[in-house]
Length: 196
Image 1 (cartoon, rainbow, N blue to C red):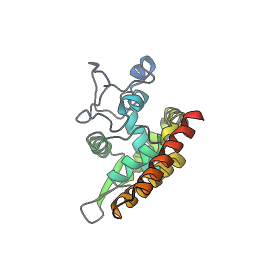
Image 2: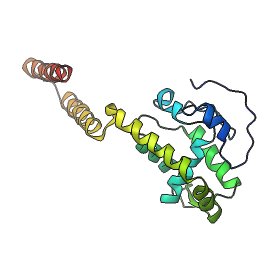
Image 3: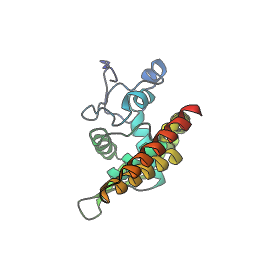
């Protein structure tokens, strides 16, 4: 999926500049936990992250809003326009590393949830890496713009269609005329989309 590159990966918080310069769009595994498949669309969006880049993204999102792990998964997905959703097997080891490095603190928020908040050390780390962080989010925004299939309007319309169809099909026995009308409406919609 991402390819495995056998580099020496230390656990320092610094950005791996040499790896980034050689593979500006590469995502070559993690030194901070199991290699996840990156969730939906990981093969496409995965090329966006080089070694260590995801920690920049996660830390920046936490700086903007203290968050739970699940919220961070959704925040990364949103920033990527739905084209990439990191798996828990990628996010949680990253959070553990950031905590070990002293960049975030973790407090119990009830219900077994943990709230992650940036520390002054984490803020200083972000500040010293402001340009690579900015570049990462710019790339994610560009990918989101290209990922029209995951645009909010299309996702909403698709879910509306699925919901309407499910409700109609489970409401009771449909007449032959109703079945024909539903099939025609869907065929017509498909034809319109193909012609756009």
